[in-house]
Length: 118
Image (tube, rainbow, N blue to C red; front, side, top):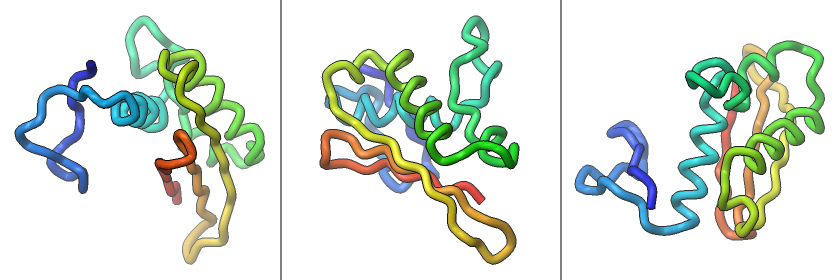
C-alpha cells in the first residue's frame, strides 16, 4: 500500500482516493517520483532521483546513458522492480525551439509511462 500522491492537475486524479492498493499503480507512482526528482532534493538520499533535466541538457549524455541511469534508479529505489518487468527507452527528436528527449518506461509489457522533456 502507498499513499496516493497525484495532484488535481494530473489527468488521472481521483479526489476521493488517499491510498494505492494496486501493485502496478504503486510501481508507476514510485517511478514517477524518481523521474521527476532532482538529486539532492530528498534529505538523507542525495543520489535519489533521475535528475533528468540536468542530465539531458548537459549536452553530453547519450540515450543509452540516460536509459541506464533510470534503470539503475528504479532497481535501487523501487522494491517492486524485482517482481514487475520493465524496460526504459530514450530517444531524441528535433523540436521547433530546441530538441526533445522522449523517455518511455514500459511496465509489464502493458503500461507505458512517457516523459517528454523540451
